[in-house]
Length: 315
Image 1 (cartoon, helix red, strand yellow):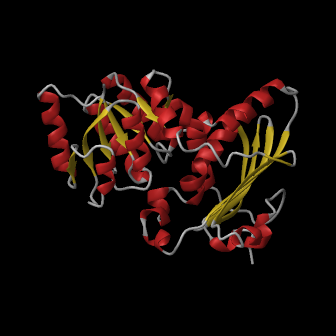
Image 2 (tube, helix red, strand yellow):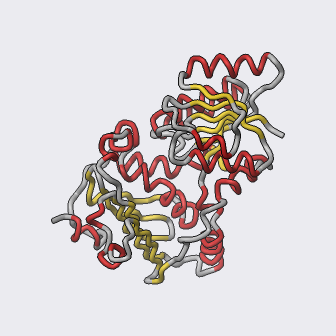
């Protein structure tokens, strides 16, 4: 049994990590969040110590280590801009880090963390759960078994509408979240480059606080992508079903269905990590570079091969 600590216990994604720690037969000793709405912990680790101040959490982790109850892993579910700092904390405490995506906001942060990995002889893992999704694994196999010289045409559309709170929270601050392409799109870009190869061309057609769109030319694919948190972008037929989210990946005009099968992907991620097969810093580099480039590229407007949703969203 391994000992875990968790930073960001009140966040949206924290319950998936709590479940994964429990379901892999491990123990959570301590958790931290500046917000104290963490009753969810009662369902998983009611005896874990909880802190709202980092300084006291830091002292407690150090005390545990000196008492022989060393933390083996620190799970990090904090806002994107804090990931780098919290990973460094984990490594310097002699623990491995398991961090939500995006693992960092800037490509050079990966280089610095790799240096600290070497200094501490510890490892950094990230959650790239789409790589473990059965439908995505089958897609990768089919592409690898298909014609080697074929270039695929892909339309990626992801609309996950958010309320007014989004703009006020850290997620609405590009300096903290990295913007909409980073916050809701990084795992899709990781999945696409994992299957279709590195990015050769990166064009941004639309860049707004609540939506972004562009064109990626990969080694084996041409990708038109559209990402949004604006409810107005949700197709009408989806709205009629009282749904606020629309996800679609069209490859050569064929829809790739992967709406189901997400329930246990964090647990699978933890299982892989505990077996020494998790995804590390280098696995994240391409997607982090991609979203960094998107964030720092000026939009060119609706010229060239842009996503058709741009027309509907540009009124």
